[in-house]
Length: 511
Image (tube, rainbow, N blue to C red; front, side, top):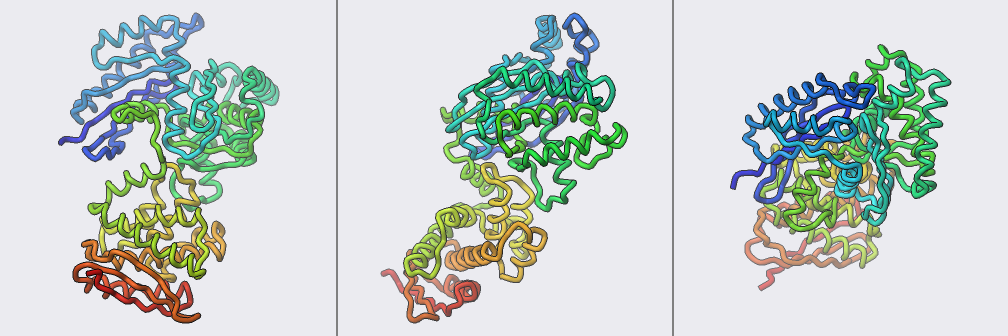
């Protein structure tokens, strides 16, 4: 069956995007195209509140460009939506008629509530936060939501965004002291109109380009060693410091700041102020950046409607499933490694040899599904490829430290190799963390050896102590365990080093 292609057009006040997703027969999805036009539609709204003919022409030209791409990808299933710039235009009916007459795509104007909902849907299907406040700063509107237990409790759309705040409060490229005061007073008054936001003490999750740019600038400033923006966490002091740094620079220098898009250099300061004031009103120190937003919410709705649900039951597990389906041919092999490793951990904990916590066990379970994922690229360097893959792409539902921990465990080859991987992240982990990574990685490597031929030969593992310095592993098997025995005996030295014990492997025919 040919993969299904789904197109989403997001016509915002600052930019218009066209994203194409591909879904295969295994329900494995990926983004295959993401194109942007900096249209700045809100700048084409005249003093009477109408979009000018020039603005409408920009829309039509943009859609024509997107149609050529859609034709190249052979995609007919395209959902187009428009937000504040078109929604608030006095001549929005005329705009829609012009689009319909143009005959390229159909565009739906989202209500304020719909726009806020799709942002919430994106966050709750791509993070594991049970409670939070979202802020999506567009060019002409700002959507905020409050969710708890992954359920949308409140939402609101403010009729201001980064572009309109700049236009209303900032005459030149950098606000004067008086302009800052007026802007911040306006934002505080706006947020105060929503008592359900006050002192929620929940993380504020930023959606959209302005939030992403603040995070990118911060990552560049601190030489952040891990790739990925999604679920990147900043403190309220971090946000304030970045805003102050950008405000201290004239526009020409601001445009050259690493991480800041040139097309956002003039509007980033009002957007940063909107985020800062919301963080203060919510009374939280945690600002989380999301790489998922309105477009992803629209995609999740369509994708999940096919199985009649609105949310993934387990965001992390779904993301790991997507990774495994992308890079691994044999899911059963990974499943058997997971089962064998859980045997080992339970037996070691029972004997008092280890004290792996429930959180560490969860990391081990996730890591077992991704162990040597990089072998799909090249088996000779499977450890290196695994570490690269897991440190260079997000895993939805996992924070950056958990993702890094999984990368250390899933790529385990030897203690010396682990130390090499840890070097850029040495200030992130403790000596105890490193010992645990070695322990869990060596367990997975031994279990990998016990299913090396991928024939499900090993059926059960039981451990026994034969003295304070030795451990016996009784392994029940069906079939010929030659390869499993050879590789397990080869790999056991890593677990021996971690436990400071000698290990004897006893293979017993289960028949």
